[in-house]
Length: 171
Image (cartoon, rainbow, N blue to C red; front, side, top):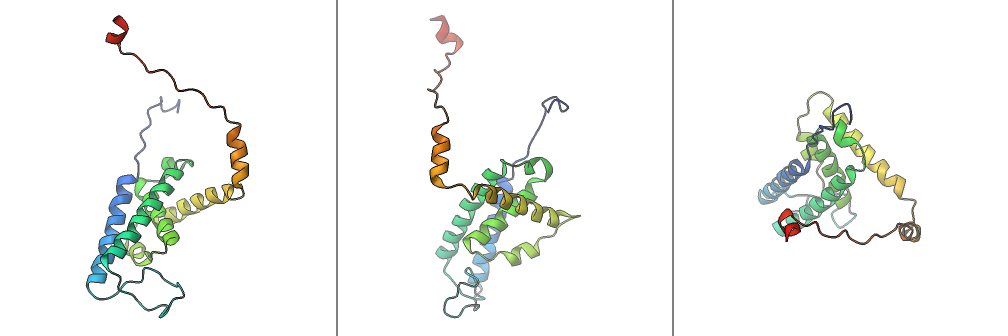
């Protein structure tokens, strides 16, 4: 930071993530509207497993809202790593969307394969995914009671008094 004279600009991937998720949602709605069907739950073991289903738009919207919420949380957690310093925002956004879709059971493989990447960006997406998954693996061994015990040792300070403006100080 000193070398940069504390002049660091980090471009956040939130807007890109929201746009890409909207693209996936619109594609799924279009496919469902075409009557081609859509498998939102691949390999769920249900009746006709592997057959493509044609859910109504409310189901797609609800599932994509879950993907958005999960991806947003993943993106927040990505700031525990240094990925925002090494990878462009769109790579991080695509990585968290892939993980979120997988976690929520939404098949976005055709969307991912349809993306055009330059240079080694596809590999970078996989690297970001791996780094995020390692982050979660590192904390997966902690039990809730251990976390509570550690947090109980953190001192809780009273809130700072409000700062008075210059005009309030004169009176």
